[in-house]
Image (cartoon, rainbow, N blue to C red; front, side, top):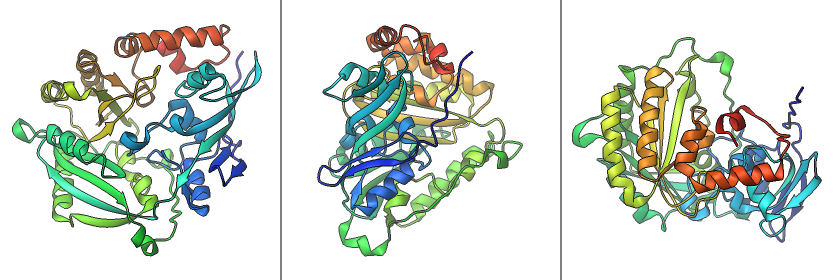
Length: 387
C-alpha cells in the first residue's frame, strides 16, 4: 500500500546569490552538475564525493564526505537551509538555526524525515583549476596515518592507498597522496567536464578479481605508483572525482559485486586497531582489492559517519568470506570505540549500529519516532536498523 517517489527529475537550480555565494538546488541535481555550475562562477562546493552522479539529495541523506574532511567536514556543515515536505506537517523550512532538530534529523537521516524540496548550499571561492599531487611511499598503516596527520594542515586534499594482502612487516604497504590547489597552473587545464557512467548491464558475468590476481594487481599498482613521477599536475575535475574513467574496477567484480567496509577509529586506538585488523585479515584469507585512509576532524552526530580519528575503507569481493571477515571487523571496530559507515554497508543491523553508535543511536531513534510516529517514510535500511 505504499508509494515510491523518484526525485531525479527534480533537478533544477532554483536560485543563486553571488554575493552570499549560496545556490539553491533541487535534490535531483547531481554533484557533477553542482560542480559545473559553481565553476562557471569561480566557486566550488566545499565537499564533494568521488563520483559526479551522486545527487544533492543523496549527499544530504547520507551526509557525505570527500578527501578533505579534516578541513571541510561533512556535506551537511555547508548547508544553509533545507526545504522539506512531510505529509503530517506540510512544508518545513529548517536550518542550523531554525527548526534545528528537524534539520539534523534530515542531514544524515537516510531520507526518513520527508521529501527534500530544495537545498541551499554555501559555496567557497575557487582556489584553482589545477591540483598538484605529491606521492609518498609508506610501509604500514601506522606510518601512513602519521604522515596524513602531519600534512593535514598544509594540504587541500589527502588520502592513501594500501596493499593489505601482504603479511609480516609489509602489511599496509602503500602510497600517501597529498594534494594542493595551484593557482599559477590554472592555464594548464580548462574546467574539465568529463562524463562517464557505470552501466551495470555491462559488468562481466564472472568475477575477474579473485584470491590469486587481487594480490598481484595490488603489487603491480604499487610498483607503477612508486616508479612514476613523485609529483604530477591533474585537472580539478579529475582530482575531485577520481572514480571517473576507472569504472572498470567495479565491473571486474562481476555479477556478484563487491562489499565495502568503512570505519572511523579514534586516533589513540589506531595502533591497537591495525594490529587486530591484520590478524583477522590474515586468518580469513580474504583478498583485499583496495584499502584507503583519510583523516577526520569534528564531532559525532546521530548516525552520521563523522567525528575525530582515522578512516579506513576496505573493498573485497562479495562472497561468504567477506561476510565472515566483516563480522569480525565489526567486533574490533566496536571494541576500539569506532563506528562503521552505515551508508557503505547494507549488512549492518540494529545490534551492531547500537553497539557502535551508542547513545547517538538511541537519540536518533527516539527523535525520529517523535517527529514521525506514523513512520510515513520507510525503507529497507530503516527496517534493518530498527529506527
